[in-house]
Amino acid sequence: MTPEDAGLSPAGLDRVDAAVQRQIDDGVIAGAVTLVARHGEVVRTTVLGRDRRFPRKPLRTDTIFRIFSMTKPVTGLAMSILADRGLWKPADAIAEHLPELQDLRVVTGFADRGRPVLADPVHPPTMLELLTHTAGFAYGWDKADPMTRLYRAERPFRATSLDDFVARVSRLPLAYQPGTSWRYSLSMDLQGAIIERLSGQSLPDFFREHIFEPLGMTDTAFHTPPEKRRRRAALHFTGGPVRLLPIRNPLYRDSATPPAAAMGGMGLVSTIGDYAKFAQLLLNRGEWHGRRIVSEEALAAQMSNQLPESLLERGFHAGHMDLRPGFGYGYDGAVFHDPALAGAPVGRGTYQWDGAAGTWFWVDPEHDLLYVGMIQLLSYAAPPLQKITQALIAEALLDR
Image (cartoon, helix red, strand yellow):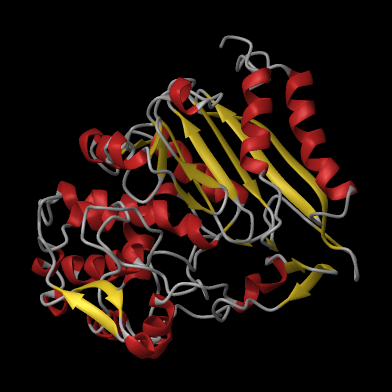
């Protein structure tokens, strides 16, 4: 499909590519692969820069990227599939599916030597709260957060299985009363354990059988097999005077085989074409080439804001995501339910997320459009490429 046939300006798409190229020219990122599709057809796939500068290695359309937290919307889809089977409901207590979490308590403060002061939860955290980061869990990565010391003692991400992960989390208190705040957390990793228990399959097997194989996502998995290793992109780090230093993955070990503890919140690798298929399924309202993968109703719940505006008025942040009135959170991803109120140049219902290494995507149902971007940069100063490209794609629309 030509850009004009898709209602997109070729010159406007050139400006999107030029904005990404400037980040490469300025030495901010090494390279990028991007894709825009509309009305079910890929309009443009662009390869810019290189995988690494020294030694030189080109990026390709089949380069495999670590997508980190862009695993989360895939976990959301898996949960939606299980919702179709009647295996869970939003009002369920999490402990109905993870009994180890039956006796969770809530931190109300810290006493001498950092000892937590605990209270009972006003109500048991629910599945709805788990899927929306409002159950009370944290990540334990913020050095300034007193909760971090507790998380470091249990080391949940050192778990050898998801059952072990749940056991470690069960010994941690909640950071706040369920439903009273929003906090980026290991909630999606707990969902991975729920998926395993409800389905009777490992998380990698469930994803493969019910999502990746039906969609033809042949390069997406929790591991990179040896025969594909050369296609995996180099991961770069930028911090202080260090710029674009190729590094090993510091968050978890890049695996050559399916990991014993695959996490629902991170860990997938994918290609631009594979993830675009996932994004297209979201735009297709759950159908793929005549086959229904998930119901419209379950997917609509995933892609609808589930947070009250009274909560969004407080403002919450996760990386480049700034939740606020009009820009809320569905299941395992953010959604613009009122773009005008949020001041965003996207259509109503736009659902999106990004990853720690700078990957990003969004699907815009109102304009029947999707965009996926892949880079590999770990940096607190990473450019807000999602916001940059969203604004330019909006300018490129001829039939807005």
